[in-house]
Amino acid sequence: MGAAPSCRPICSSGSPRSTTRCSPARRRPLATPWCVARCTLVPKGSGTTRLPRSARHGRPRGELVRAVFDAHSTEDLPGTPVRAEGEPSTGDPAADEAYDGLGATHALFLDAFDRDSIDDSGLPLEATVHFGNAYDNAFWDGSRMVFGDGDGQVFERFTRSLSVIGHELSHGVVQYSTNFVYEGQSGALNESVADVFGVLVEQYASRQSSDEASWLIGVGLFTDEVEGDAIRSMSDPGSAYDDDVLGKDPQPGHMRDYIDTVEDNGGVHLNSGIPNKAFHLAATGIGGFAWERAGRIWYHALTEGSLTATATFSEFAAQTITSAQTVFGVESPERSAVVAAWDGVGVAVEAAEEGVAPIDTAS
Image: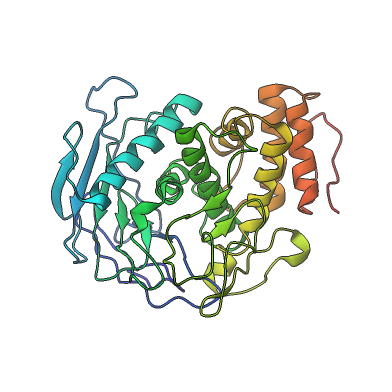
């Protein structure tokens, strides 16, 4: 077991399916009013991440299997089963929102990207609600989603936001693909990719075009006492909230404002605003439904590219350009939009693909 800085819980487990216990999040620093917690399960005596076991058990590809548990304000996981796949609503908003959110996330990845659950092998989707006492967070613990109820002063229950549910489950997709190291630029990419697919879950569920979408993460989480619309804005990083107590949203949206810090695992929740803005620019530049083209490019880059776990912004940008030309063509408007998007946030890209002239997108 090792302590994690800032607001990430401390997790340890000898088995992906064993009971995992996470320490409650402390009061957040004003610079990061809401950090998506993410626990990495590490086998004892090993330095490598243990991934949850795939559990298709012969089910047809794409079959949805959900289970929701209630921790009853304790920190014991998984909790008491309250709703299984196909069962009627419980009447508990948190349990039913979690159940619906699991389904919406599964639908996006299956319908838009032909991905069979989080691991692309039919992993059952599980969630625990009512975790902890006034717990101000939600997190993916390596095998399940966990939601707190909020303190009622700053935060409402964390199941209220579909983009947050999608975000957290998307950490699992990252875990099963590039598994970006959760520190510095690779950690910010981990957060950004989760934000990208989190907003796409919400947009797909509502069938919103890129122009119609709010591009906000966490709408509905703040109580009425907080001056803010959401926890993050992908269209305008740094504008999601401006509150007397929480302070102003500190996310940058351009490399000139990159925050060099040792806090928050090297600013993973801060600097993620830069690739977030790049995706927004690409999606709105392409137009239409963001999951159809911009989302396909980002998904291809994540799952079929040559990215390493320690990828930088520049390396990720180059891979998205390569993916755009692989999926849509070298002369495609999609590729041009992706190049322009990274130029718009000041990320320099050395080359997009072998045989294609280097691209300097620094601005």
